[in-house]
Amino acid sequence: MKIAYTQSLADDSTLAPGNLPVSLVNEVIRLEGRMVFNVVHTPRYRIFGDRFFSDILPTTALFGTDGVINLGIRTIPEYNWFIETDGSLHISSGSILQKFPSAGNQEIQVVLHIAPSPGAGQCVYARVQESDAKSYVESQYQIWLEQYNISVHDCQFPRAIQVEFLPIGVRSEKLKVLGIILARDSSCGVEKRFGRWYKCGIYVAESLEAYMLENGDEMIVGKVRDDGSLLSTVEVNAQIPEKNDG
Image 1: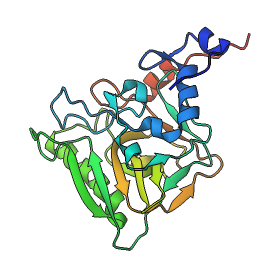
Image 2: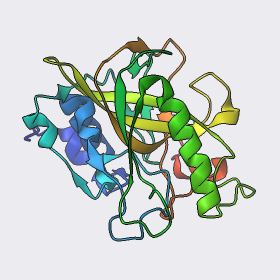
Image 3: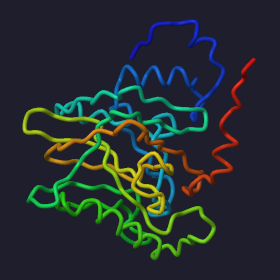
Image 4: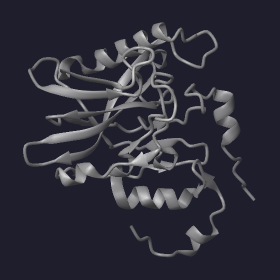
């Protein structure tokens, strides 16, 4: 991919996680759309199962995948998404999210970062009914907490999660949707603008019933620590540079 030279890109000294200029990463997101987030964050060099959450940024991924393009899956527009220097991705109002029916016989394929059991050499891979997709991921989080004896008392991990499905690509013929699974602390309430979201897996669905984020419901997808735990509010605020009003 080639990006035309502009002085603003050349002068940008603020770096995103992954050490690329923030303005450059945002320009790539604008040009490539959501498919730029079709990357793998699972730490293959570590023991599978040691983390549930990951970053969403392509600049912190192990590698990108382009095989879905050969399957005819094309990107979905991003509608003014952008990242900040703290590694957070802003998903703007008006963006499309996936909505699954409460009943039906369609299935969804789910791949989570975690292993099905300690020491297992693969990620969780499952086919579940669309109506059960959210509850399945939420229950897998509880299993992970128990299997790995993860403490929730130091606020590095929530006691329970709320899940949303973010489509990034779609194939029009014999519709198939590729997307990212997002999760956050379920105590944040129903308004999507409250609390940070985190990537926890990917999914493939056979249908796309979409809904749009309403005005004021911007979602912020955050960055995790190196050990996979969640940044505290103090750490997040410390990474955001102060605005210079001068």
